[in-house]
Length: 309
Image 1 (cartoon, rainbow, N blue to C red):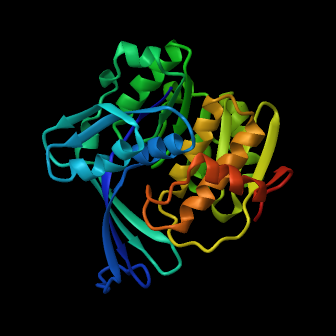
Image 2 (image 1 turned 90 degrees about the vertical axis):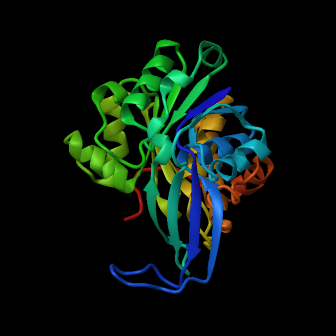
């Protein structure tokens, strides 16, 4: 079973012709309230990709809690370890422009009270892979990673939103997923050159882990087990890129959890991330395992000697 320890939000999504400038008021074209949060998005992405998934986190005792959990509950994700705590459920305020680009403000709410201690011994015993992000308190992320490492459980960290990462956390993980900006910030902290053509290799070698670098429309690459692979999707019409990185992380981890080799896992992950750009909302656009498998042959996989500029 996959265990996801992370955030649950209600996403308040406004469509706008373009992203507003500071101090500017724009008229939007539509509004939706949709379930989100990086933890919940990745849990649902993994479940839809075929994994058996349990979610651990926290929601508030307000009216937003039920809709924030709705997507997970409908998909059959185990939410028994999601705690209800006093105060508001986490929210994300999202603007999406006509090109599918977004600007997001996240208010943690109940996510600030999520605890690794909510993972009981039986749930640990059933877990083969732990997936983490950084929208819940860093000490709790570290506690969960350390507990999983001590039990021989694979630990995957999507280091988003980026913040300084203690060496103890980096030493407790097996797979690191970062985008270009997050990778550059981590490279600066570790005094590693930020050139994309060497960055993933350097991080993988320095940390002795697999490093997955997401590249937006150019797909993703992985440096792992002495190889560097690049999976590149075909061009698509982007409706909403919100949650595409979460789709990739969830599908990648689901593939690794079932024992898929890195080339297959990377292709499926890029297929899932690409498909997630085809609809509005971080969770409503997440693809099923069958849809991912049907789209995957369109993803080009190459041994990466260089990356796009």
